[in-house]
Image 1 (tube, rainbow, N blue to C red):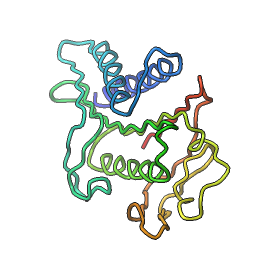
Image 2: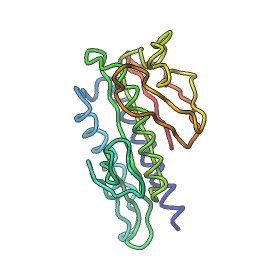
Image 3: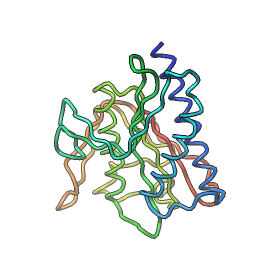
Length: 212
């Protein structure tokens, strides 16, 4: 039964991502920053989630900026308390699936590099912790109008470890370091293997989804 709710929640998330991509790319949504991007995705998730409440006892629940307790310290918060951009539950009171979504929305005019690339891997690290703590489905969803993240020819030697360009990959256990005189954050080591890809641009907007 839990697998049923997990599969349904996965469908809700996947359809919501696709819908948000099309709306952003075609002007149906005009998100000016990450906060509005989060609100738009939250609204779409809620619509699909409620449509999937097929039985009276089935409920879809969504919380934004929700805190959970972790067994290990989060790189993001440096504590055992972590704040999730979007936390989802779907099912009945006794049987349900859970999901966590972290979002990144990078605009070229707000170029904050290379810290943004570090933050991407920091979010992946957090999502791995959520998964270990029992969250069933964990995603990082990134949107940008800046080719720098997608197909930049090369990055500086000091920050080249933090690479999610199309076709790049990460191997479990690889240590990622910020080699500047004053590092933005501590080294990061992930547990999973990841292949990074980006959708073809629609109206100069790129999307990528990373499932943990």
